Image 1 (cartoon, helix red, strand yellow):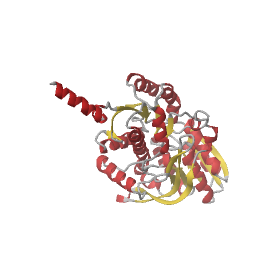
Image 2 (image 1 turned 135 degrees about the vertical axis):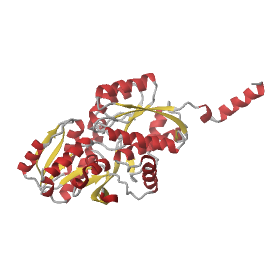
Image 3 (image 1 turned 135 degrees about the horizontal axis):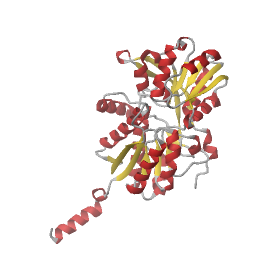
Image 4 (image 1 turned 120 degrees about the vertical axis):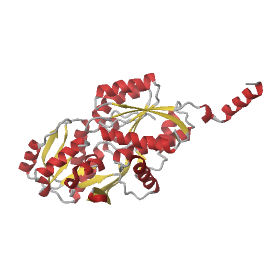
Length: 389
């Protein structure tokens, strides 16, 4: 190349940073196998859809998404995180589904100086005493979905409720959230296992407690098993079931069929939300993957678009973490959920709705959005958060 050509190339690179800019590396450690594997699959697929829609970019900045399966094993997640942040030099990490995995692996992300954006797990400690300037929750704080269900149970007039959840971080947070806003009596509080396949003992305990309703938190494959066995036990006909978003998504509803009918559901997002961003997302996701998106897909897409807004605002200069964090905190992106902003602890403030389960296409269960249960709702742990600055 002659001297003129070299000068022209240098001028082009100087005036067009995107031409010379290395892709921003984003590490995604998520659950892709086992009964909860579809949760991570939906987060991943929606995130990839957002990148594809920008031709390999987010916010006009080239990105490289690295995805690995944690198998719902905290130790595996820690190994993946170490590779992402130390070997691959990723400055952004996302994807963790289960709170026991997040509690083990997220501190390693933060200690390495990277930013973590959670598209699902929202342990209470990260919202309160262990909050961190480099930690953002884009989905919810674990208590929030159940708080909406507790409020709904109160509004519906259920005086006595039995509550169940797996015995791990999220399960404990969820039941605490339900009890926070439920004004009646909890006549049974039962803890199950994350690997449980037979709930007959719990069904017997529910029957003996004679509650007006049951609130249960069992995400993914656990939820499929629980709802099927609840219907088979005959309890569905006499004791209504109250669930929040993680316990009855579209995949669970498809798997259990009519057993989902009659459930009282609360959620912060639904496929029928009537805003331009959501309509376009649902159509694009359905066309590409030949299935309806779940809440987890909505979280994955919103997380990607939030990152895009910060990359655009900073020109992709992710090494200036103060500027990048400030751009994230503004949350200046069109959320699929409509109303969305971050609280002082960098967790969502958003609305919660009552959803009904109805017959949809081909008589499949579908969710229809009703009225708002909680408006501009935040978590209670923000008061414990001492965020720098």
